[in-house]
Amino acid sequence: MSFDIQISDALPRDFDNVEPLYQEAFPDEDLVPLVKELLASREDVLSLSALADGKLVGHAIFTMCSIDGEKGGSGSNVALLGPIAVMGELQKLGIGSTLIREGFRRLTAEGIGQVFVLGDPNYYSRFEFSQDDLVAPPYPLPEKWGPAWRSIRLQPQDQVVSGTLSVPGPWQDASLWV
Image 1 (tube, rainbow, N blue to C red):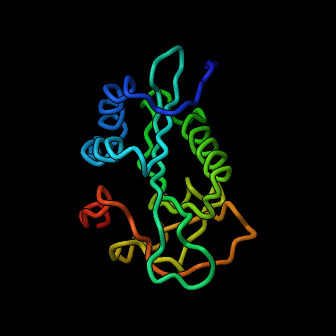
Image 2: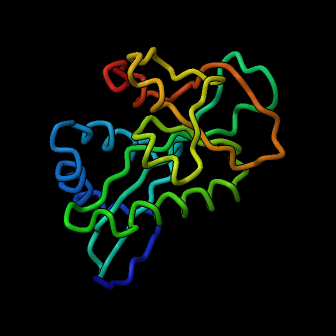
C-alpha cells in the first residue's frame, strides 16, 4: 500500500478524531482522558498529527518535563513521548516511526536534550531508545516493566543527568505508571 503521509502540528479540528484513534489503538486502556488533558494544556506539549488524504491516521504527543534532584547537566530540557496511536489497519506501515522521527527533529531544534518513554523495548529500541537506570520515572514501576523505561539522548554533547522525571499535571496520575 502506498500513500502520502503529512505530519503537522495537531490542530483543534483534529481533536475530534483523536479520541476514536486512541480507542482503536488501545482497546484495553482508556488513554482518552489523558490525551484530552494533555491537548488542553497545549503549552507543555508537542502534538503531532499524521494525515493521509486529509484524514487523521496517527497522532503522537511529546510532553515537556524536567528532572528533579538532577545530578549532572541540565535536566530541564527533557520530554516524555506518549501516548502515540496509529489507525489499526495502517499500523506497521511506518506512520508511528514517521511521527516519532519528526518529533525528535523538532525537539532537537528546540534544544530538548533527552526523550523518555515507557513502552515496548523491542519497538522503541528501533529508535535507539535504551533502558534508563539514571533517571527514575515519576512513580515506581512494577519490576517486570523495568526494561520498558527507556530514553534517548537527542543532544549527545549534553552532560548525562540523573534524578527523577518531573511530569506536569496530566501525567501525575499514579495509575498511568502501574
